[in-house]
Image 1 (cartoon, one colour):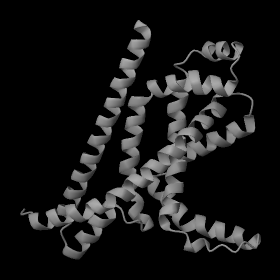
Image 2: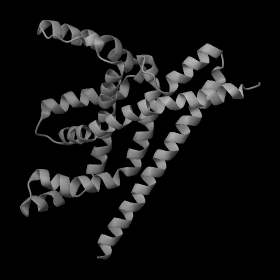
Image 3: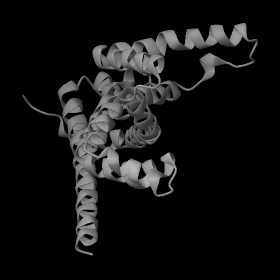
Image 4: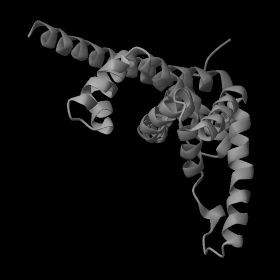
Length: 238
């Protein structure tokens, strides 16, 4: 099999234009899902809000059990129709079908990432002694301050390797956004492949770009882990 190297180079350069869209979806999804996932983990681990806990358990099971491509189709095809019916019922002058497709993609991945991060946070919370929060509150801190100053920093430190894996998984999952007509890395490569009938070359280029991005993300997280480790060693020594 002979590869079309000229096409691969052209497609590589063209596909780079999709990186900002991929990273935008990833960044917004992570930033929104981090606090939402932590709150979801607290509710699911607690016993105070049983109805909310039951709803979130069903939601988490749905996200984990339904294939991502099916979730995408539901968000892309069904969700706008539901929003349109609600807007009409409330007489809201909103053009639901005029909303950019990337907005639905971001919403979907926020919901998806929130569910998976909640599991990560639940595991992280179990590594922190509950007595630390109680001690913080007894020393005059509010519960919110205890979480933000004592618990969350430790949880984030413990979950950095898992968060790295979740981030790379999210980046790769955004490749399915082409099904929502969002022009990102994979969509650009697929369009080029369809126009030139060079599918193998297009997929090789796409794989290379995702490898570069994920490798970069892994090294960023390794840098963060090293710095966090050094910080805690200094605190322990002091």
